[in-house]
Amino acid sequence: MTDPTGAESTAHTDGTAVRGDRFSGGPARGFLSSLGADARIFEADIAVDRAHVVMLAETEIIDATAAGTILQALDTIAIEGHDALEGGEDVHEAIESAVIEQVGPEGGKMHTARSRNDEVATCIRYRLREDLLEAIDAAIGLREAFAAVATDHRETVMCGFTHLQPAQPTTLAHWAVSYERALTRDTERLFEAFDRTNQSPLGSCAFGGTPFPIDRERTATLLGFDGLVENAMDGASSRDFLLEATTALAGLATTLSGIAEDLVIYANRGFVELDDDYASTSSIMPQKKNPDSIELVRSTAGIAHAGVTGLLNTLKGLPRAYNIDLQNATPHAWDTVDAVTEATTVTAGAIATATFQVETLEAAAGEGFTTATGVADQLAMGGLPFRTAHEIVAQAAQHGSDLEAIRDAADEILEEPLETYCSENTIEKRLDPSQSVADRSSRGGPAPAAIDSQLELLTTELTEHENELEARNQSLVSAHEQLAEVTHQYV
Ligand code: ARG
Image (cartoon, rainbow, N blue to C red; front, side, top):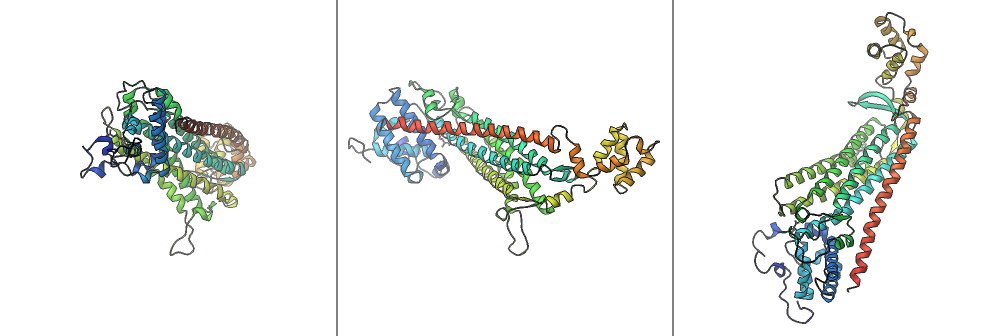
């Protein structure tokens, strides 16, 4: 523990270097500490320290020599990693202690014009940005998997369900695009959460700003932030960006849970065969192939919703400004983003490798008289009030669901023959599930031509989102490179 002048430093690596001997021990020490959980923001903290020190030197708040010494120590600490930190209340304090241990009291200049309050808020935003981009990447991967299914199965007719009861024939493409569209909105919400997260609170200090002539724009730029959280009290105390990100992820998890439920049911019906990589077997029943991974995907919504609830309950009622309750808010976001990103990736793999059983799907397409609506529509097109047509087909549904049953019902209900409204030949056609799908070419419908327009839109938006993701990734990478370059001018 010597400083560059060779003098004995008074630094201690347990945090007393930072705050003196008061409040440094006692039974609540472990309870207070977030050091373990802070491993997640170790690299973020090093980056934030570097940017802050560079800014302090550029504004001549500290001299270039002190900056160089501190930045050199940070390099060593970065290489040694989080596990080498010797303790302290959190990663911010532990890194500062390690700097002071290496360079002596000069190291204490690093914490000029800032507080752990703006430091931690900056670190969380810095790290969460990367996590959100990974989540977006996973969501885009899943959308690509659905797009491929849709492209391959424009004409694969299947049964569409409502209330899980056979409802109307549709196509596998229509089903796949329906999920791709929901995932597109989930992606948009993640982008919005990213953009609001990507604002720098650094320079807020404890909450009340500072008399030092700091340059907040400069640290924001060095760290790749898009702008500033303007108000210092807001910057140090607000965590709605965590809530927004977690809520966006919970929305995605909710979509995933629906997809998972469909896959479990479709596997049960023999509509889909999951690849062995996404299934598991029973330890006792040798014949079993269970959709285990998919069930875990379904349950991920539980983790995400717990994250949202945990955050809402931790954040509610907190007074301004900083309160250490916020330390317990952060892990809800980490748990959520990890679980949801992994589940999204697993789902993408499962969809991309699944075998959809076209014959089984087509054989079940007409089950439960799914063509009934099309028959009623046809009668209504012939001039019969739709309500009357509905009554006739509903009665036929109870007596055979075929042409004969429709004719009998019409005889009972109508004054005139069925043929007044539509030929029997035409009705026969409407009873065919493939024809039923082809008939529904309204915008957004399942007819192959309608699907083609949807696929066109989907492809455009997918490309746009891929580009937006790339731009954000690239901007983080350049900030990274810029910070490294500027830092090394001092070392
Ligand atoms: N580790 C804390 C957190 O995660 C930051 C430290 C601020 N502590 C304090 N007592 N002001 O929020």
